[in-house]
Image (cartoon, rainbow, N blue to C red; front, side):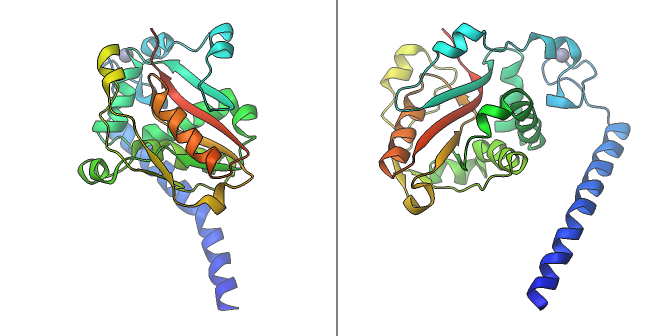
Length: 236
Ligand SMILES: [Zn+2]
């Protein structure tokens, strides 16, 4: 009885908390208006970019998106090419701890790809090696995966572990990226992924080698399908 009452109270408090968060964000916007992450002009709320920079975000052309496949994955979806001004959004999320950008990216993903991503039964963030996580304090793929799971109404599980550290791929030359040691994964919760359509979420996909390894690990653990989503894709 007490447990049920606790659950009901928590359920009722959720919309109130959401409303309080929104009011606090609006008040903060009034006191400290947002500036564009890329050019310092007044910014829109979404992605913290001004209108001009927002227009520069380059969505995948249909033919490119259709032909952009990752080995070992059943489907691959991305929102924009990783180039200015998108790089500032991703860097804001990664290095400036602007956690709210994860929620904005998740909202954009659901608007653009709701049908495709909605097939997933389980959301799994791309894991970060524990040593890197210790330094950074959090996993930025998780910052996107958490609100995305909430918006899609699907469970989220940290089902993968990264066994090798590797080096960040973004900003490196093709030769450096190819020379990067292979990242290895381990599925720590195979029962959770077995026979399910898994949505693997990463912040940036460069060569796709890491996503391929992670997807293969999930398939080896029994996942029925692995869909990969990233907001940012490096091209060329
Ligand atoms: Zn701007």
